[in-house]
Length: 300
Image (cartoon, rainbow, N blue to C red; front, side):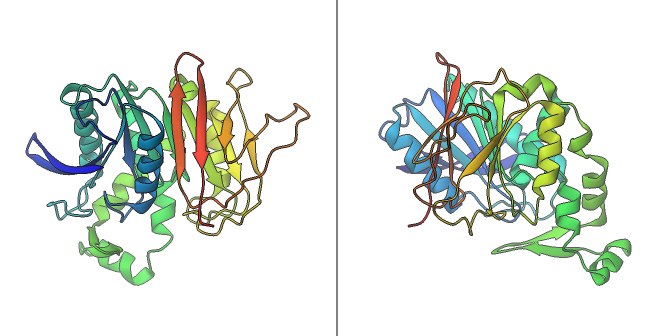
């Protein structure tokens, strides 16, 4: 089931969408799910994620929202600080108004960049566990790569350029300067490493996996690599095995439903995916056992 609602606070009106199974007043565990640049709260990958999670586990809900200038949001100029404000307001609403005992974060691409920036700037982690898929750690490089010389000339003259899909987003030179000035790859996330898991395709051309590998190694974060998957995981063929890179040997084992990955060096062969991944990663943290369960599935 799903419900649309708005969060009206601090002069902002944030359009949100809640996924739940039966009782929207009995959701002690809520995942705040975010998506990539140009998307919206009706993201199909998050819909699959929410359907799988809420039907399999009692008391779990998923909240997605429109970033500034995305979807049905009323703002017309994308300001990155406001993206962080939206994430903060939604997270606080989930905990304080919806009374969630545990708040999780599942973010992709641009959403992962904003979440990491939020963590770096706020100095604490409100999420019990975090899963990042194809994180755009070098967000400036990812978005600047698609800007033509003609568009750079417009920006330098103080003009706006348009980017996006269903809704075109106005970008200014200030936006790019802000991205350049906030390079999260230079930040230290060691304090949050044990609560973070990353999954990334080896054929990602928008957010190269080499950046995520270095970031994961530098911050002792566990990374699962999916062979031949591109940025949206649209080309992941069936029967391809992922591989685990763990920078921390103390991290718990990771199990995959419809797939299973054995830790490197154990002598066990990984069980291959029955279906190709379509960009849908399912995360649940079992506190008592202190390990992740991940469900990844895709198109037949």
